[in-house]
Length: 360
Image 1 (cartoon, helix red, strand yellow):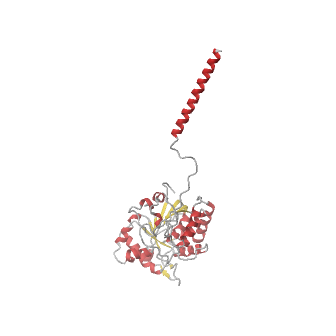
Image 2 (cartoon, helix red, strand yellow):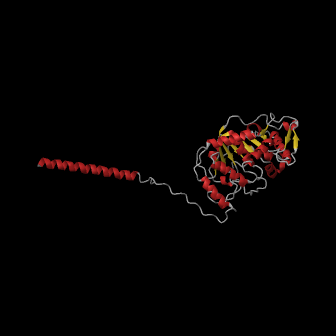
Image 3 (cartoon, one colour):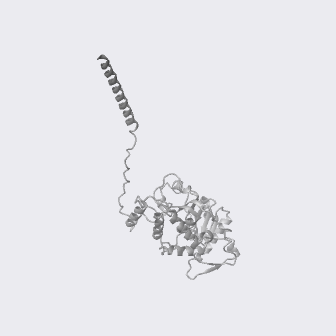
């Protein structure tokens, strides 16, 4: 009897000890994990109310953008390769995008791209000397390319690191760099475009002192600068003056010219796909070139409207000034719709929100 009682006592002690150990372990597990977020799906970000100053017609547009942009983006390799191949076969950007001494010798006749009467220009030795010698684009593709527009959507976007991580960075229309914008737009520049209208408005058509123009190019380092002297005849003199200024002041910038044959074929290419209004912007020109030359195309700062599509706050036309956008030559809403379609199809990646640190 006593032996049986001793066994029960020992069993009870062991049971109590085990329960105590389990309770102690459970207590410390609760304490250690008290800082963790419960494993339920995060609540969706609250959509801000529609502002009273929303741009005209923007609500329907923004709702469409949000619907398309909210879907997880995934590159569709087949669709990308198909469009890239069509651009290469129909527009031949590899060989014809830029005028060179190889493809446009002395004595050639240049037909202006946008003159209705097919105005021409004979290539003289002096004009020939302003042409880049060889095609600047390699036959191999770059892995990642970032084309950077100038929309105010880039302000406070923190996209600079992602932009600069691209193998090739293309910027449009001599944008302002530095000056505190580095975090949002980056600094790396491999190619920059310069519309003749910028040379007129900002530098007096280069008819006066030209040093301010050349000094403004310092922020682009040794990049290539693409001008368009052969779209309209009136653009030729100022573009040639830009080249002479770069030479005279020994700037490391490498100027080169869009080929008007390429501009015409590209206009036909996108017109056949629904883009019929307005002239193609330099942004869309560079996107088209990138689709031929880059395996992965990322777009930043392409948003031509005055309210942010996600935050709904007012945004400037440019991230670096307060000048209003005037669409008299380019029809930017149609171009944006095209880019949004290409984004939805997984052909290119359109960045409209703020960026996370890291690479493209």
